[in-house]
Structure formats: structure tokens, C-alpha cells
Image (cartoon, rainbow, N blue to C red; front, side, top):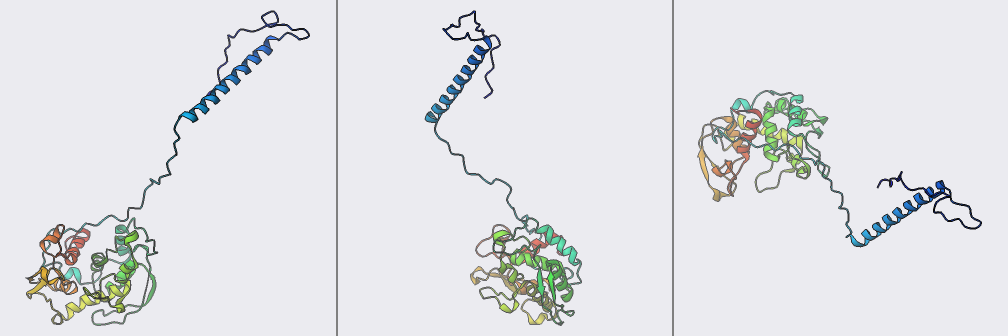
Length: 314
């Protein structure tokens, strides 16, 4: 509240006025009288304000300020990737020249792609690091028929560097490995509490048959990618050793549950046959929508993630 405004027209008390003269007392001067009146007014106003405040405290209900709410932005995580299932053909998922062949991305390209898809990722509270920030040590792999160049040991590699080295060693398109990581473990978009060490340990789903314990020999991000790439080449190099082969009719189940049924398809090429040997299920009609108890999405998602990220897989 502002200070009370003084009245410039207040009547002045002088020695000739109404001020009483007492014996032995001197008459009050006009200046002294004005100061006395001003002080009296200020004291009166202060007293009234104090009484009003006390009365308000007795009458008004007591309110407690609410606890502070943190309404600032919270980490949203990477943008959700919605697979594009349009044009899916169970007999022709991907062409041979898109799955096999020399890398069409270098390590920097791959890391840039991962950084873009993984943008907004938050490390898990258990210490698991986002794939765009993670670093990996790689043991060496000797050259084989499937991976003629092998792979030298290295430390502190980015995910892009690992993928590039594996793709060079085994002559696999690095895009295949990127899609595989998302299809199997969602690693390119996993964030916060959904990001676990187990996702890295079994990044490509290699050595993890349905309903069985994963084979500990293949545990680890680098090993998973290398073994998966090598296996895809083995399907190409030794087709007669595997159940699903190009251009040969074969019955493919919809789900690990036998009661869900199956149907016969004829894979159009080696690459499609390889995907069914790696993930031995095809999607039912419901899988393209919300799915049902018999739906499986592995090969459908491989197609869908590829299409949304890299265009047609043919």
C-alpha cells in the first residue's frame, strides 16, 4: 500500500487560535501542530491496517501453497517408426541384390543414419547406453567361406563402425543389419527403461530358437551381427542344407503354435528363402492390422522397416 497522501489544505493551529495556553507552558507553534497531526494520522492508519490483518487471519481460511510441479519438457525418446506394409508379398520379401553385395554405406553414413533414428534417446537408469552413444570392443574373426575377409579385433567402435566392418567381412548390405537390429530388438529406437543390456546381448536374435534358451557362445552385440551376417551367406552358399530354398514350394507356419496353421509358399529368390530360414514364420492376414493370437511379425517387419527407411526392397 502507498503512503497516505497529506492534505495540503488542512487547517493550521496557531498561538492565536484554539490551542490552549497553560500556565508555565509555551503555546504550540503551527509547525509543531502540523507534525503532531501528521504523526497521529500515520499511527492511526498503521493501527487500522494491523487490526485488519489480524481480523483477516481470524476470519479467512488458511491455504497451503501446492507442491512445486515440474512441468518442463520430459524426454520423449526417438520418434516411433511405423513399418510400411503396403505391397508386402510373402513369397518375395526382398531381392537378392538388396540383401547381398558390397556395402553401399560407409561407417560414417551408418552412424549418421543411427543418430537420426535414435535422436532423443535417453540412457536407461541401469546404465545401458543408447545405441547412438554406445561403444563396442570387437574380438577378431578368422576368414571363412561365408565371410572371406574375416574381421580384425578392435576397441571403442561405434555401432556404425561395427556394422560396416561386418558388412565388408561377410559381403552383406549394411541396411540388412540395421533392419535386423530393429526387427529383432528395436535397438534403433529403444530408450529409457525399454533399453536393456539384453537387447544388445541378443541384438540380432542369433542363436535364440523359439522356446529355447539362447546359446551363450553368441552373446554380445558384435558377435550377434557377425554370426547373423555369416548365417545369411551360408543360406546362399549351401541352399540344399536348409529347409527353405528358392523357387521350391514349402509350408511355412504362421506362428510357433502348430494350431495356428500354415500355408505353402514358393520363395521367389535366395534372399527371401534366407529370411524364412532365419525367421521361419510368415504373417497371417491379421498381422497387417492389430494382429491376433496367431500373428507373427518378424518377416513382415523386416519388409516394413526396410520400406519406410530405404524405399522398395526390390
